[in-house]
Image (cartoon, rainbow, N blue to C red; front, side):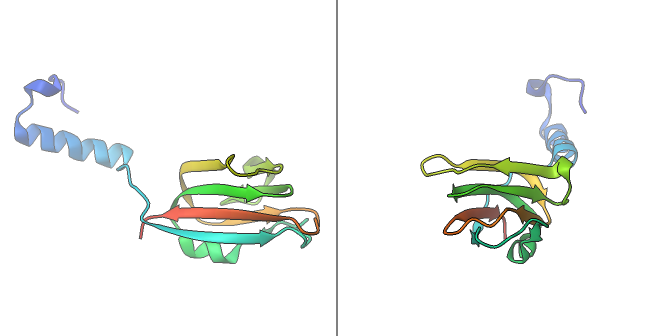
Amino acid sequence: MSEKPITELTGAELINLVGEVLQKFGALKFANDLHVETIDLSKDRSTSDKIEEFSKLKGALALTVFRLTGSMDLYINKKDDYHKLPFDAIEYPQTFLLGWFQAETFYVGNSPQQGKQAILVAWRRS
């Protein structure tokens, strides 16, 4: 990284600096695609099932819990207590957004709850 103030950099030095920053920190990316998944919470997932449809979205930029009428545990990338996010009911306009991570796999754990569901939105860049 340059020791000069940014206002004193030449065009070439500025381009090099931007390249170094992008290599070190990555680029801010906006999602241009999404996947909506409705999860029926009446199914017993006490062993935390993998959400197969979400595995197609490797590299998701963010995940929104849009609506949750029951309770569930959400795991991202690893199914263990350290990666467990417990959720109680969430009703619009309240939502939960988890961003700035690379999602490879999602798991959901829940006890059977008749008539309850979760609506999740995975945001990604295609």
